[in-house]
Image 1: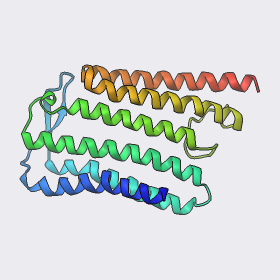
Image 2: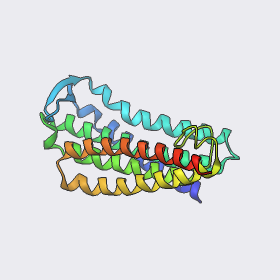
Image 3: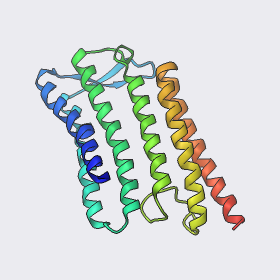
Length: 214
């Protein structure tokens, strides 16, 4: 049941953006806006074929996860964690791809005219939520997770550190989703980057502290 649900969600977040991209592609004229300066003004253009990069990457992630799942059938928690991360990344790629398509279609000269930062920040925050859920579900393994020499050396340190990091990621992701509608878009994104670094530092120090007490 869970696997079928993932397949359905993947179909929506991967195939739907790709289908929309292919439908609108003939109506897009070259060149298209591809790069923006710090203020959000378009300062670089490129080929419209570059629009296909994001939905194709999402599709590659989907195929890669399916292949890996076949090779790691016995590690169900690991497979679930990978699917959660893959879902988060795929929805980010899909959202960015559709926003770039919209910008190209409108021939926008500034991203503030298209809600790009709001959508990007919202999708990036959703990625944090799925990363957090992944942290809460994955056991100690050699592929993914918050990997320090202290978490890798002890199941107890691994589990407690991932419980903390997972909850921090989820809480921050929810906050980022709300802030994407309320705060200056660029500022919100910079805050997300800064806080993600802080969470990483917290996890490192926490795992080190646990290792000294076990």
